[in-house]
Structure formats: structure tokens, C-alpha cells
Image (cartoon, rainbow, N blue to C red):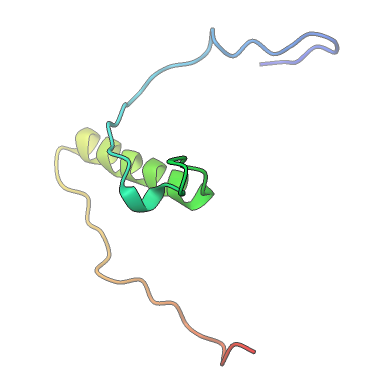
Length: 77
């Protein structure tokens, strides 16, 4: 898509829906007003949708790591 100066980009014509994922909003995902406004939560939602999409496309479960090492550099100061 080329963008012309002074003209807004039209994305609706090029959008293709490849997967939808229905996910429940957990109590811990919300703030005290009931809003989901933590970016980390949105990344978890997208990751869950990606796992479901790959699982559906491949026809077999997606292997997930049992643990992810997080090496520490030293004590926090």
C-alpha cells in the first residue's frame, strides 16, 4: 500500500480476518474500576490467540515450554 501525502490510508479494504479467539477477562486483569488497561494483559490475550491459531492450523497441540529461564545478573539495588 502506498501512502499519498494529504490522503488518509484506507486499511479496511485490505483487512483479512484469519482467526478469532473468545477469551474471558479475569478478575486479576482489571483495575479497581473494572478496566483492562495494563499492556501486559493485552500481550497475554494476543499470545493466547496466536497459540490457538497455530494449533488450529497445524491440527495438533502446540508444545509450550515447561519453564522459561530468567537469569539474574545480581542483587537488585
